[in-house]
Length: 363
Image (cartoon, rainbow, N blue to C red; front, top):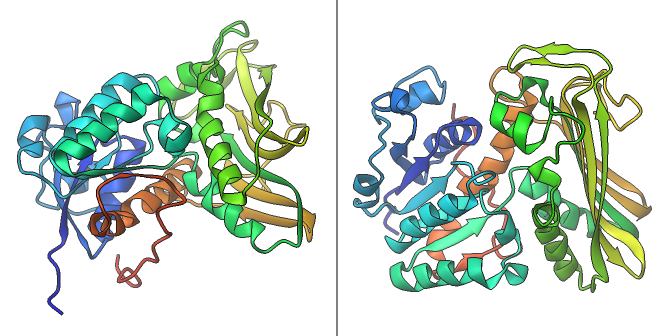
């Protein structure tokens, strides 16, 4: 059988997610980094290898000319630009890529984690673009997606009885170099009467709600409703972080919320986020098992009780970067499967986990 040419893949965005995407595409034997799209004029013309901090040039210069990049009809686009505070712009960008026939993978559109429960005003334009361009879309979370769908579902297959599924992200944002998200989306350092968009309705339920609905569908259970809990704590003392500077005493220092899928009156499927700007805040809340900066957990309460603790690091031991990289790996590794499948809108139940074929030993 003739060997197929690598799929020409564009990485759109070079922040925390985009850097990991560039590295993942470069490492994948079935993909070729065709272009890198940036918005910051200071990044235009810089080599992708430099932007991704891999210690070598790739010979691919970053560009802000989106029309020119999409005009080459790339096979795939990893959309790594933020959708947190610009969801309409992100959707418009993604539709443009689908219309030229690209496979698009992204974490940017929370509501499409479970397309079956997404609003028509979001799904309809995506499906129209797929019909027009014969592209595809797969959305999976950066918090990370596998930790809130495929890993807990895998774990349920190891259980005898199941009382509750709990997915946890426990994280100290002090090492996360993304001030807009940390200070404004999550609300760290803001007055205690500030309402963080991350937990503001309907975004709160939309963030974890799609993944809870997806897991319920996979398990064949009907949800009574989706509930939400929220706790916030102020900083007792002013703290200074290396990445994002000063956070004043009395401002938000920790945030904890749950999105709960209620089955027969009890929280049966729970996605929980426990986040801090410093380990001195909310010390009575769950901490990473080793006391480090972050971890992801999946806990199956039942017989037997099953607990997975996942600690990933990247970019010099940074756990935020490691979490991003694993989520990106799920998306990037799905591209060859999506190219072989029919055009469509896919979710985490559709797209199988892809072993890292051809990657062992590659640097």
